[in-house]
Figure 1 (spheres, rainbow, N blue to C red):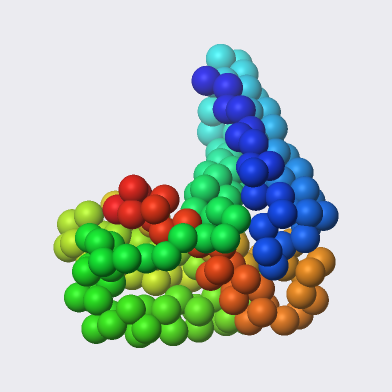
Figure 2 (figure 1 turned 90 degrees about the vertical axis):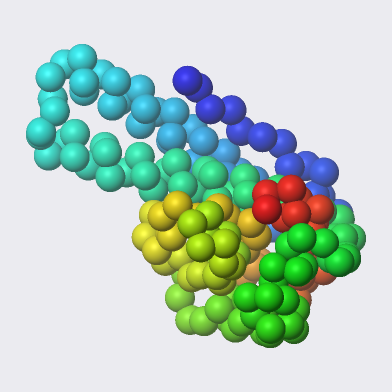
Length: 191
């Protein structure tokens, strides 16, 4: 299977995100797609050539997870944003947030605080398919910290490339702009 980069050009002009920042971010995402495809090809060659168990094969396997998750997380991130955002009305996801966090404000404070932590990574609102609970989770890098068996509902990129061009080190201001661009309809569909 060959993965194709999706177009997120419809996000250009989103308040709080310069077009230059978004174009740079789209280019970075496209690199993850390209590298995922290249690594898939290299792994197929390694399998056919009998290179299994070699250090080179092991590194290809490790790198594939990084590139693939980089591709998918960016698709989820851009996919849960839209110009002007959308409001979260009483819905199944709202009821679940209120149940698991006590109030929407509690969830929002926790999500924002998670995003404001020092370090690079992602913040993901996960739904645990086994317990039926929601969790705000810090993902360090692309391939470390995911909750197995959980569905990502809302994804926020907090690597520097997502905000430094527009906000410098003011990550909290970026998080505010992100919240204004959340497409809650996309989050509800994932739930």
